[in-house]
Image 1: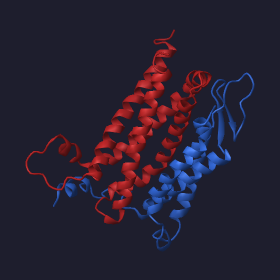
Image 2 (image 1 turned 45 degrees about the horizontal axis):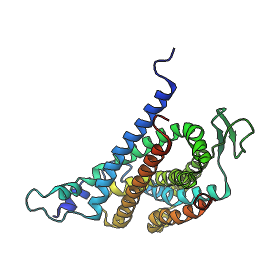
Image 3 (image 1 turned 30 degrees about the vertical axis):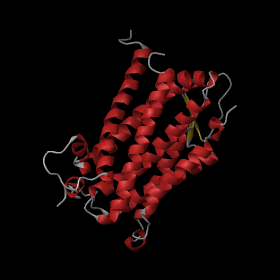
Length: 164
Length: 131
């Protein structure tokens, strides 16, 4: 006897993947904005945007790495069901570009995974100006990639995901 | 001191890995080699293994989908191959003298992943131009 149905089981994992992605997106967006628009001086409390970019960005690095790996693992786990129950109907319906964007998503996710050790190292050595450019570009790259992965996943879920 | 300095540089390298020269070499090599190996695996279709989700079967290397057994999945195999080879190459890089590893250009850490994007768009052209 099962406590939850098979469909509910996979839906829960899909939601876990979503929540991890949201945490990751928030952390990376804060960090990327803080390197793109660093706060030079604060006269008074500052507005929302100032507070948004005035985060202790270096402290996010380990969390970003852990969240990326966890999101990646959970995404890999639910991918098996996607391949059978989502991709095949998407292909049958002729949504070729949607399928192409999912393949793009999986490739980008793996490439970003290989960047994490360097990203972590550069942030842990943020005092070293030698790594400034690499640290900033990698952070923005990961943030843009994360937004891309999130939006593609969201669109795919709308195409055929939650509850289907 | 600006706030940017106070926020972005707030965490000095306190852990042993963050101050390790060998880990620096490993991480930088991993970031350079990883995307390249992944794109080679993609181009040559060299997965470490092929997974058949409908039958829960794993085959070493590439294996076509079998009739009546559902689709095959190679992404796991490409990813595993990339992580394995990149780990080995990066470990070997840590054995090189520091005078050599110091010359690894840092620009490659971000340039190669950036260049990977147009390549991936080209590689996926079958989906963009599917009739």
